[in-house]
Image (cartoon, rainbow, N blue to C red):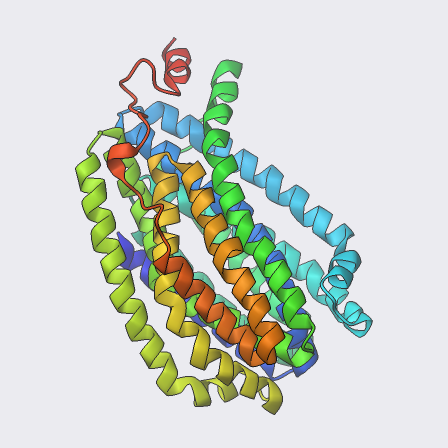
Length: 439
């Protein structure tokens, strides 16, 4: 199940790297706007991933317990909930954009460029979130091949439209966002037509089903979303630290963050493919297999991410100059790539554990692990490094924070300690929901 998502995620991250390379040719200011927008993007991602985790967990558990009709009704509730939440968030962000950039420490000279960029960018974020909800439904049903194909398709469309909108139509930075709007819009049409044809969505027929279904959904969504909110909150604080070193470092940090997404692509793919497997095993009470699955995944992530770090180390110099034409920014990106990727193994271990905790019905423990990683390890070392050694210390602090988080991962997933969420147990959390559904 991981391979199709890996190919799809590789395509989308490659598209984002190409997008960054095109934007990099526009100069340091457009890159700085993208760098300041990254923590806001992570906030939107936090909501959509939190709801996506809940989608995979509740639907896969329902399918594991042979509650197919109930799973379809949950699908309808999830899409409606995601539509409303992301729409409200994007409207709020548009209304407060000037205040947000001022709080982040951006220069007032960037605000006119922000206004041009954020309108199409927020539309692309909304479309991307809806596309993700569609993917989550497919993953919950154990199908990853089709979402992988759609990801490849949208990435290719985005790459083709980028130079057209940015340079040919002379739209600059806003053109990059409009290209993403076109690609994600086509992706949404494809994915939701496929969901309709699969008949995976069914409107709930009673208010009791809606109420109890939403209650079960939010019992997973709230902690999962909180866990996902912590990284963007951390990114906001980190961006404030980065901004104190100037727009060049902000631009380099933004490019480095995109490279990070590309570098941990296998981890992101695993966090998408493992939860539906874990959910079904949990619904069948096959806990020993969950433990075995976790051991295999974590061992693989450590070895693979060390290999990726070595590869980046060898190509860091030419890659940094390929990503931007600004010499000072390229030098800072090079320094970032020499240090931070060495810690992606520790980051990957934490991400796998957090994803599994949410899927197995332990979202509160996922939140605890996130708090320890970000506020106990990452941010303190980032701040100390920034004070002691400037931008170099900033990058070194990020590296040490990720490594320490992976090393101190004491709150490991232990399947024998998981709560009883059996669908056959009359005392299970959602038994009343199923009773209402059958009546």
